[in-house]
Amino acid sequence: MRYQSPKQHSELGKGRPSWFDYYAGYSSRFVAGLLPCLDLTANDVILDPWNGTGTTTSVAAGLGFTAIGFDANPAMSLVAKGRHVPAEDMARAVSRLDALLEAALANGDVGFSDGDPLRNWFTAETASLLRSFECQIQEQLTECSQYRSVATLHTIGNIPPKAAFFYTVAFRALRRLLRAFVGSNPTWMKTAKTPAQSTTVSPDQLRKLMTEEVSALASALSQQLLPVWDSSKPAQVDVASSTALPLNDMSVSAVITSPPYCTRIDYAMATRAELAFLGYDEKAFRTLRERLIGATVIAGERPRPAREWGETCLKFLRRMEQHTSKASASYYLSTHLQYFSSIFASLREVDRALRGGGYCILVVQDSYYKDLHNDLPSIILDMARGLRWRSIDTHDFQVTRTMARINTKAQRYAPHRSAVESVLVFSKRHGE
Image (tube, rainbow, N blue to C red; front, side):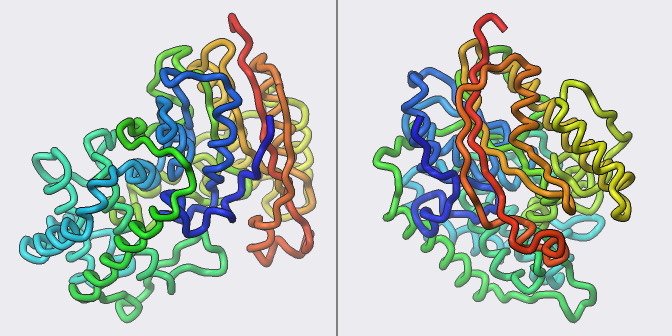
């Protein structure tokens, strides 16, 4: 196989991939270059169990394949689904936006009994306006008979791409409005500590901002990267955990994905504002945060190291436990045990869904805990051997955009350290 770099730098501002900036995303061209090498037909199922903003599903469906994507974070699943909005719906996007905003102003908001989670950043009037807009997305663009917070839903199956598109518009507008609450770590969202810090947005300002976002998304389509785009066959995108995929045994022909990196990226905190727009109060947010792989919070009983994780992983964990840095043997060891336990459970679930002879292609990145090398590609290779997958190829790319470069505290351990991003290609053996 010949690989393009998974990194997205060449796609900035171009096509549907540019619709939502996501730290953990990878390149559409990378996926488009892989698919022809896998000897698949249009009836074969392409899966991404960590779908994020939907690069794999968007490319696979756009090239005519059957594509399925799941993510435990509903904000990301809505962005992924919104990427499948048909061109004819895009042509009506501005007039539809006007109708949504007019109805939002006329009807008021649905209200939250314990306070709207958007009050973490906005005044009561602005939070009410934004909530009313979200209510109108559901009322006008879905088949929901009455408003329900997305936080209370187990599926987003009833939210069509045209509605998910406007959720994406709202997410982009929120990010612009809340730039002041993003700290030196771009994956961490602060909140307003006093009423004086709360943000106020007038209806006219919100209309102008969202109109700009709709126009920006439409403009990006003029620079579509892929030569073929089939909008008649959208991907199946929904919310699900990678450790419990709602799929039949051996129903998937190929998996192209990137598991969450073991770099202490709090994926829930990175989308805190978007989740608030979906109705996630503090309790629901905490619950979701604990479910996401790589969470920086302790969730339940600490897992025990397992032989199936491989010697590379177990050696790294032993060295972490013995490290002299504060909380290495307690908090940090617990979060890493959570991570590796969830990753192995996810790979085992992928193995269940993957047919014999099917492919699994993973983009993974190494990292460091203090001065200890966390060789995640080698750890994944060990786990795959335990599942009896056949390793076909490994291709490495040097990367410089890492959390260690962003986090000034981490830089004191290795100020000039880069990372290796590896493309790991496996095949599940026939009869397994």
